[in-house]
Image (cartoon, rainbow, N blue to C red):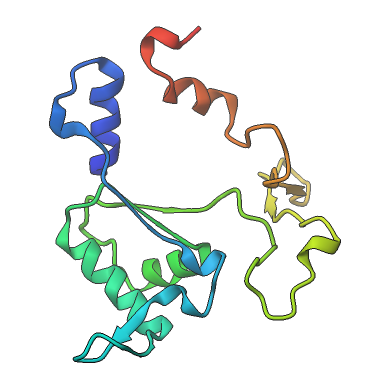
Length: 164
């Protein structure tokens, strides 16, 4: 079980202590500013020598996961896939997460014209029913005013006193 799930269970039950706060790290900067998102490698004088490669960035994330201090690590979907394939989370209590409300817009793309048209949502496959092919359904995009979290999950995230 992930540490985050244990802490949330304690918070929901009202049996939490001051040490049950959630520690998160958002390493999903590549979703908005892809090239410099990995961060700089600095010279001895503190100046920027170059930007980290993606491999170096993923190794940095892996090292943070291995420290086993975080409750949740937020990454882009593509980086989460690579980290999972590399077994970075194996044996860890850190919960992997990715930005599920992301659409196909990349705000920092060179010569982008994102302001000229609406972003398009990703598609997810629904479950197959007997004797039928899977269907593609759009996920809620960030332009929607409605929450994309299922109602049952929304209820479980609310404090016990606020549930109906």
